[in-house]
Length: 79
Image 1 (cartoon, rainbow, N blue to C red):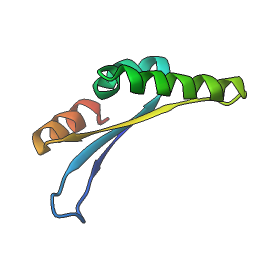
Image 2: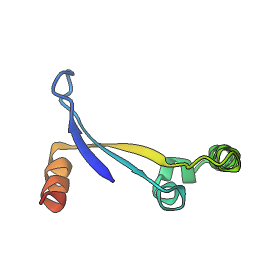
Image 3: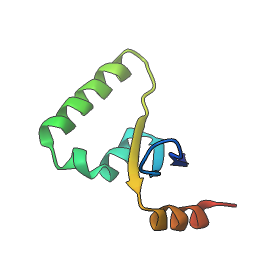
Image 4: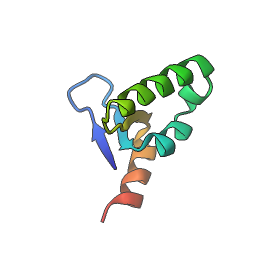
């Protein structure tokens, strides 16, 4: 699930796309995590601990977009 946000209150008027989903889908899409083996190991450890407690886990991620990227995303995903 994803949402496109626009910060109209800040000085930069930036766009963000935020996504949530299952760790096996989301983690491979997070290049900053995949490029840092230590961080990936820590995240996987935390996810394992939480699931061992019987808790459901989801990953939440965000990415800054340019206005052009945001418009393209909006047109692709709007109904």
